[in-house]
Amino acid sequence: MGLAIAESLKIDLEEFKRDIEVIFNWLSTEQDLSFEQKIFHVNSQRNITISDCSMTVVPPQIHYLKNLQIFQLQFTQVFTIPSEIGILTQLQRLSLDNNQLVSIPVEIGYLFHLSKVDCRNNRLRFIPIELGYCRNINTLNVASN
Image (cartoon, rainbow, N blue to C red):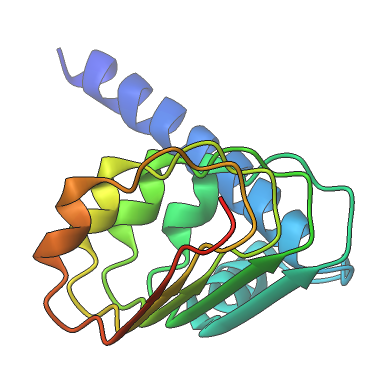
């Protein structure tokens, strides 16, 4: 029994390491850091801006950015946001303008600190009703969808 638990923890640790590597590589070109430094780098991110690139996917490992407050993803080819964005409970500003988004996950309703959401110039057909749970929103831009 103990061996099975140890094996499952080992697998989880290996998956965690892979996930950290994915999100770190997504955020940084710096490669000569220890694993611990990479974890610190990922956990310390408060503001991320990605713009004017051919990126098509936001990795689900985005949930490791626990302290993220501002996420700007603009002028990309991204068509969906992973549901894991709902784990980023410190997020205050979410700018997803000028992409190819066709939907926004309902998990956006967990982002209680959101004050500004910009989803203009996408291909959205609707905004999830769960966005109404975000009581601090004072700016919502969904023009040109």
